[in-house]
Image: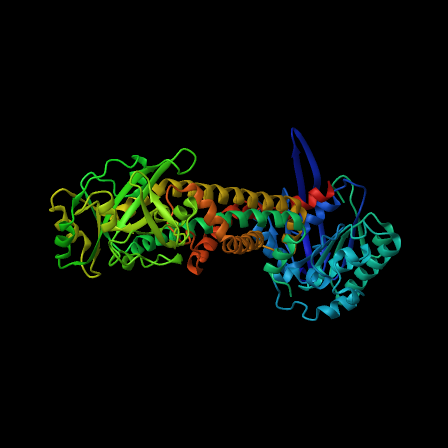
Length: 227
Length: 396
């Protein structure tokens, strides 16, 4: 496989936690490649290591062992542990994140929430037409509303818009429908599917929702920290 | 696009009551600080104004003679010493001296004063020179006597109140059985002159049988002359003591220094308490937003960005508190004046608290500076939050 088409290349990723004298192996030598433009879903029972793997692939955490390359650039390798500042710079370049709990700032309007990332960093090719972005997600009429005035599904759409403003290459979604009912879960699934299909954004998603996982081009099942 | 300071400002709106209470704490400490600085500035100005308005810069008194009415009263009206009237003419010959005003003070026990009697002080003054030197005196009724031998009196505000006298009334000098006609009543000055009864000095000399004698001479020195040199010359005069009002001022300032230190300590404590409040508020807000701050970092915020965000929140609290405190200090300047007067052993007339723009700016800078120092720890704590920790806490 040509490396230029690879979004994420992970080799032998392990994550070990120490809880007192107990050693917990969250990930046990995982190797995987994710192609650019791919939609991947991590599935598996609770505690299988899905979120831990997503966090490491998304440069939110360092692995205990193994190597990771993002778009051909090595991030973690033998004996390399990056500091918070370096990890942030990598995240800025490549990733957008959405979480189960949305994490919108309650005193900011939808428009303000979506542009919060610009307060810290703005990529050269960042979205300039925010209303159009909101319209593409069906929430343009909610632009001046506060999060408290939105439904769960709308809040997650706002969180998606916020993740997209810097046009990330890879969108990481951790249980994006975990707090939504089945109808709104389907809506969000459709949004993610169209982002992947129409804009070619690589999506890596952790979910317990089989219906949502079925939208992904590839499902990777984890059990006891292994694929 | 939203700016970082807008995010900081809106964050403070989440817990409005908490933010308002913190701002109130800062405002109160700023009020104390501004008032203290205003007092430091105003007190010395007021003292200078009072001493300048005395009309004379040097007081010459007979050696051992109490030269203030208050001291005379403490001594029960006894212990007066006299100097020869000719000394005032000698002093006037000095080229540096612009004017002299002779004074003769007397005090008698008045059994009808108050509940169990009291001392009444009479100050014999020269109608030609004394009124000119006391230019700031204002009359409630009547005017100065003009004849140095007239059996007339001008009463200080409190003396007139106590004796219930108005212009046209008579006052009796106890022991001497001499009546004086009240020709004027002064407005309140806030000084010991309020309790004094002014009488032409020749009249006092005659009534009390001290013709040709004086107890004090007020000396007005030429503006361009060096007071210290004139004082030195007067030390050579026989049997007199020279009281420089500059020295008096220095004595008063050192007396007030203790009160100043006390007020200053209160201000420092108030500012420190307010800053503990700031640390508490911001730190609580950081802990409450633990997950949110982690998420901001996942969106691309560097540790420095988070530090800045939290520091701006501290800055906004201190800025609003400082503005409110300055407004409070300006609005309540009269109340502060009254409170401070109660603490002081001696207060000059006029406003003791003087607040102006440079002073308000200094206080503002101090509040914001100390506030930003107080905000360092919470900001540092927030900057160190790792997104992975906040995400794990979300899972938990």
